[in-house]
Image (cartoon, rainbow, N blue to C red; front, top):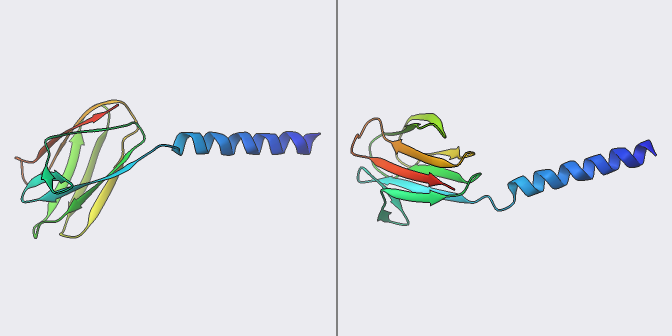
Length: 113
């Protein structure tokens, strides 16, 4: 009986893990020409869902830094060179203002639903 309960708990735990990860998407937002781009197009606003991951990829020949001081997600990815990317999982709904500390004109409003 105890073995049966343990197996049931393991299956239930696996189902919870699958359900929380199911449907989570991954997006790449490029840093290019001192702007944020998605699929080669400059963006100033972008919407994702709770649990989604955004990869910030530097396509420029100079360093970029991505950070946010927003209530839903505070992070600072540090500075990184061309060709590298850093990722953030957005786990709360709301709006995050994402910026580059090196290039103040780079601002992205990220809506997490």
